[in-house]
Length: 174
Image 1: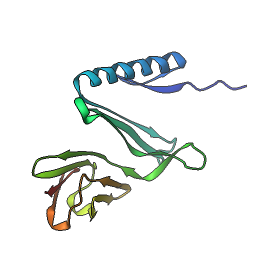
Image 2: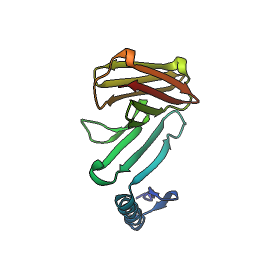
Image 3: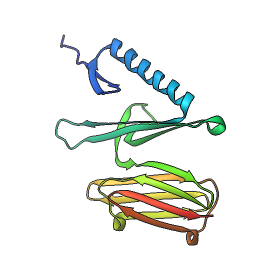
């Protein structure tokens, strides 16, 4: 019988090899952070990466938890290219990554900010259909795609965008 490999779990400092004790400790840390966010409002963002033995398989994953004060509630947004397979329920690394996106509903406009490292303005494709904005970009082996539900419907004439250093900003004038 072979030796059982140790598992890696997320901690506040990064990833560490531990068993169930580390898992429960990491869960306790996460619950403490969520409690702090609930009291003060704010954001918790964690990312990670997995690589295959030959470096051809590369998975990027993470989550962004935003807790607002009052009636704003909690928003949990996963991102990356590791998703659950619908048939098997197991994690699968997809070719296309889902970028991290922040949406700001301001008085005169809605601002969307998407993080797509390695992408320039010419690599980005944006589609707007009513209240659904679809972002896609590709450069080399790096591909991104995400659909975002907007707070209201917009037309293409109300939209402008810029992309600098992998940060896409889409402004939709009300």
